[in-house]
Length: 288
Image 1 (spheres, rainbow, N blue to C red):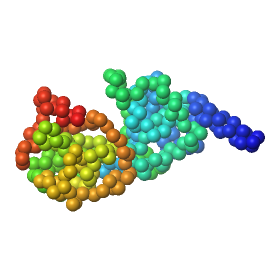
Image 2 (tube, one colour; image 1 turned 90 degrees about the vertical axis):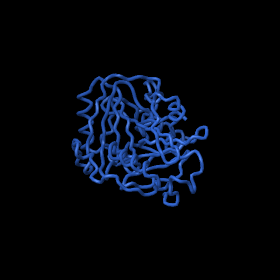
Image 3 (tube, rainbow, N blue to C red; image 1 turned 45 degrees about the vertical axis):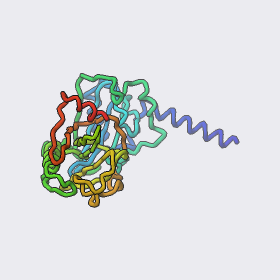
Image 4 (spheres, helix red, strand yellow; image 1 turned 30 degrees about the horizontal axis):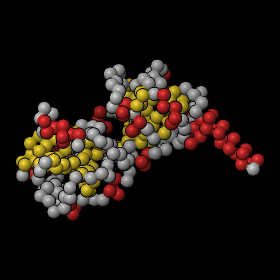
C-alpha cells in the first residue's frame, strides 16, 4: 500500500512540474525547431500563446508558427506545453507527422492551461489584431528553411474528368483546385425542398457525416458528401469512389458550418447556377 501511495505522489508531482511555466522540455524538441521557436518568441514577446501547425501539401512538408495575443483555436490543438514561460499549442493536419519533431511526454502537457484564454473556434470572438505567422518548409529533422512562394506551387494542373459525369461540374472543380490548391477539396450535395444544390469548398480534415466516398483529381484529394443515396445517379460514378480508409492520415472533424472558403451552386438538370450570398436560398444552403 505504501508503494502505491508513493507512485501516486510521484505521478502528481510530474503533472504539476510539467505545467511549470519556467520548465522547457528542450530534450523533446528537435534542435532546429527549438531554435526557430525561440527566435519567434523573442520577436513577439508580448503574446501569450504560440501555435505550431504541421502539414503536407503537394508531397512537401510544411510548418507554420503563429501567435495572436491571448487567443487560441481549439480545433487546431493536439497538445500543449510550456516553453520559455509561454504556452505552445501544436497540431498536425497529417497524423503521420505527429511527434516527428515534437515528442512531449504526457507529464509535460498542460492542456488545462488554455481554459483561462478565449477560444476563437466558438465564433463569439472577433479578432482584428495582427496575425504573426512564419511558414517553413521541412526538408528533414535537421533542415527547416523559410518557405518560398514556389514551394506551394503544384506543377500538376487539375484537368481530368474522372468520377464526375457532369462537364460543368468538372470544369468548376478543376478551376477551384487550380486556383486554391487546397489540402482537401470537397463537394457536398444537398437537397432542399425538391431542389438540388452543390457546395464546393476546401478543408484540412474530413467528416463522416454524409460521406459517400473520395477520389483523386490529378493527385489532389476530393471528398464527396450527400444527404441522400447517390447510387446510380446522373452526376457521380459511385463505383469509382474510394473508401474512407484512404483518408486515415487526416483528422475526422464535424463542422456545422463551413470553416474555410465555400461556393454554392443550384443544380437544374445539367445546368449549374451559382447561388449568390444575396439570394434567400444562400442561407439555407450555406448553413444546413
